[in-house]
Image (tube, rainbow, N blue to C red; front, side, top):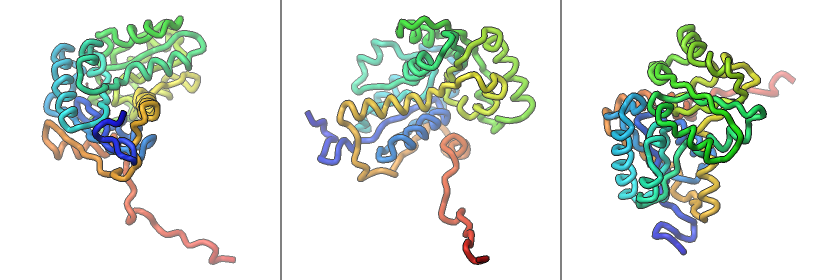
Length: 280
Ligand code: DGL
């Protein structure tokens, strides 16, 4: 059956993506890479973020408010591009929402369960996400014989937002946080926070090349791809490249941080010519 947004060109309605702030742009970026024909409406709740240190019930309320806002924008699917928001949503919340809401936890857990050889998996995230036990529940739901070692890393968000992803202090903080995972001999680590893909260099350096890092951003994008294909809801791209960015807080601060998370975009003027073949 065709939904109201369906045309012969598929379902051209946008995908809604939301987060406590700019971190969910790592998910938006992964979606743009995998689904270049889709439009995105991104909502960053910068006025109330970060969510990590907040009470989960409060985050649950914010999440419901934003999902209803996106539903009113006629998006075809919403992505909770925030681990803390995903951890705060209950099954009953999801079932009661007026549109499907994809979270970032289950896709990452499925990938980690597939990737581990030893059955010892680590997860790092905000205090809210780790304290919620949502990753433990998701691992248990897979039925796989996996032992999960969890570690909250509250300082990582503040360091990434300050643009600090390579210096000595970041390395020292990472060594401190990751020590329990190293002692537990995990062979796979889930980056259970939207900001952590930007710390991939430090994390792989400290954990060593033998540890598989699972990015919830990339895994969620793959999961959204599969859902759109399976439900016949892909867009034909006629309206692509008209993404919208919405912020509950100050727009300049949002824009200043956004480019770091969304990735640098090349403009025509950035390309320098290379004359070739003149010497022969
Ligand atoms: N987006 C959050 C998450 O993935 C990190 C930032 C915050 O604490 O709100 O958990």
